[in-house]
Length: 86
Image 1 (cartoon, rainbow, N blue to C red):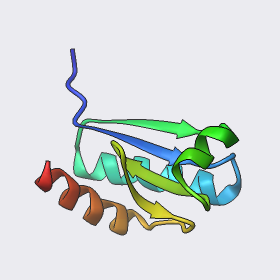
Image 2: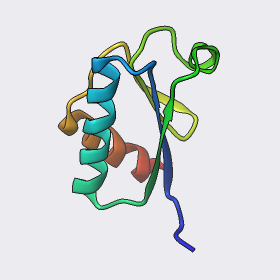
Image 3: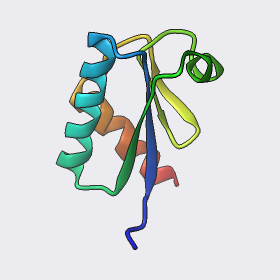
Image 4: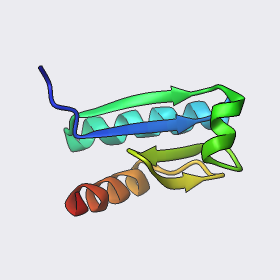
């Protein structure tokens, strides 16, 4: 069984910005070579429980980006920092 180090949630209804955020997160995870479960959250009610503006990104239960498309580099920086603090 593979140990998942972090669950990354992408909040968005499927708009181009949300899809780009998902792709950037996937690329950042691949480039860092970490174990992560990437989950797309598309249900409007569930999104509203987490963020006010999409796209949003959470590492485990921590919102790290909201209302912008984070670059691959920004995601990598935040992920490294987050994992160091775990």
